[in-house]
Image: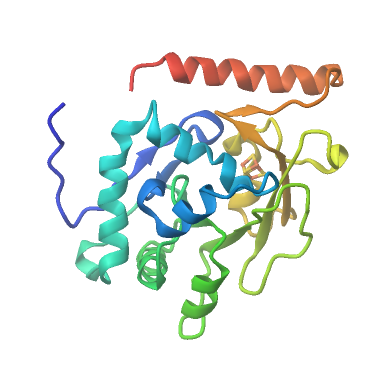
Length: 245
Ligand code: SF4
């Protein structure tokens, strides 16, 4: 397939599907991110990066997304984007790095600048890169419309306090771990929005780990309502996989 010609200064926005359906995201390429390469090659069973959904997708049935995500990786991390090239965004909420991870300080500064240019939009950034956030926040304040969500890499080790500068923390657990505290499992973001609102009252998010969008179920018997919810998510995922790209 011929490569799509892109304006070298334009950030690519992705229309999200599955759990994130209805949101747009500014993502980057997980496959070429040195931090993701290192983390996803872990042999430790309890590190979520070893089961990275993004690596699975981008290496197989969503391989064709890599071109636009790589474009964003380079645009956002190579240099500070001129204000005139930062787009006006119409959305109320934007997800940052549904694929990928912060690459360097320049990447985060570009997102902060984008947020300053679009004060009417809330930007939710998931990241494991405490080092980048700490470094940038030595000289810059997080814009008030940016929500920093620390993505805890360790499965079944729930963090109840976000690290310094982060507003919320996202935890992965096996489906039977802290089952009653799981407040994200089986949910759709636009019906929940806990992560996208600073005042949602939910700063600790817990989700059962997934594989290809499906919750990994370790228990034979779930409660009926919970099982129904998880099955509904699986069906939705089947529809997404069979849809044309
Ligand atoms: S807690 Fe809600 S908004 Fe956050 S990731 Fe889960 S479903 Fe989405």
